[in-house]
Length: 67
Image 1 (cartoon, rainbow, N blue to C red):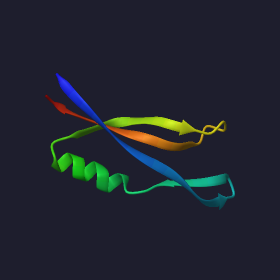
Image 2: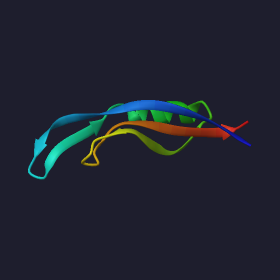
Image 3: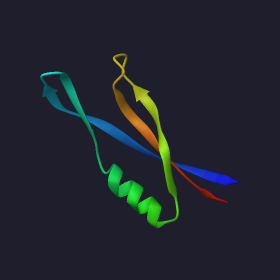
């Protein structure tokens, strides 16, 4: 059996490019590496706030480990 935890992060608008808006997540690598050191495994993400255009503004990183 596994247990799961979620880490909420935001995706910030960083500017505009030729193809439209540019978005960037902050600190996701540090969060994943920190959780891995604590025995958690990154399994994916869930968009929690999304624009009508499909751009994700907030998401939860999903981590699991054996109970």
